[in-house]
Image 1 (cartoon, one colour):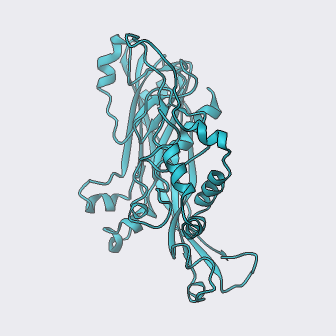
Image 2: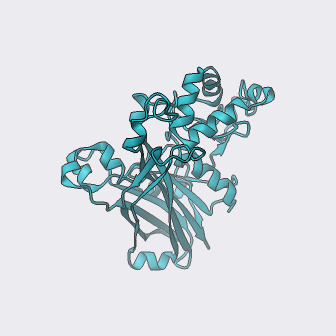
Image 3: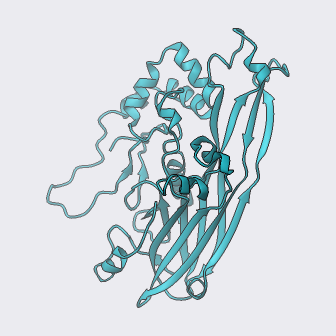
Length: 352
C-alpha cells in the first residue's frame, strides 16, 4: 500500500465542503458539512429519516478464510468557537468581532482504528468496536500578543460516541462479501432534537473508512470481473461509495467515500492545495480569492485557521503556478480506445 497517496485522497475527502466560497459568513456557509454526516439517532427520527445516523459499506474480497482485514474510520468532530461576552462588548477597537462571525463551527480530526481480523473470524461472528471522544471547553486570548483577559475566545466541544461493526460472508468460491457499518450513538437532548446546529455538534462529519486486506485482494465495485459482476451488484452501500485507492493496479486498499469517485482517484499535480469548496475548480476559486477586497480578506482571515492559510497560500502563488491551473490536458488518446482513463478528484483540487 502507498500510504501517503491513500492519505492524500482521504484528506481531500475529509475536508470536501469544509468551507465554501466566498469563504466568509454567508447562506452557503450556514449549510456546511453536507457530505458524510452521521447524526444522532434522535435527530434522524425527527427528520423522518432524511438525515442518516448509519452508513454501510459492502465490498468484495478475493482470498480465503485466513485473509486479514483492518479498518480505519475517519471523521470530523465539530467544536463551536465563540467570543466571550466581554470580548463582544469591546466596541470599535475590537480586532476580531467586526471581522469574523461571533460564532463559528470548527473541526477536529478523529480516527478510529480496528485491528486485523481474518475473514474466517468475521464470517463466524460480527466484530463490534465502540468508540467515544470526550467533550471539552477551552479559553484563549483572542489576540495573544496583547494578552488582555477580556479578549477571549471560547471553544466548546460536545462528547460524541459511535460504533463500528465488521462482518463477512462467503459469497462464492474464494470470494467474501465484507460489510462495515458505522453508526452514531451520541445522545441529543429532546429539547434540541430538531435543531440542526445542535445536532451537528454531536455528528460524525465527513465520515469515511479505509479498508485494508492482507493475504487477499479487493474487487473493483465499479468494474468487477464478469464472473462476479452480479454479486457485486447485490452489495448494499448506504451513504458510501467504495473505490480502490493507491497505485493503479494495486488491490490491497479500498476507500469507502461519502462522495462519488472512480477507482484510483488522484489529486491533480498542479493543484497548490485544498480549496474545500465542493462546487468549483482551482482556477476559478483562485482568481476569485485574488479579487477579494481588503475588508473581505480581513474577514476571511478571522473566520478560520484553514481559511487564513488558504488566503496566504493563494496570494503567494507564482505566475507559473497560476498559469499551470489553466487549460491542463491530462493526455491524448484515440476516440476508439477501450481502456478507461484514470480519474481525478476535480471538484476542488484541480482541472479535469
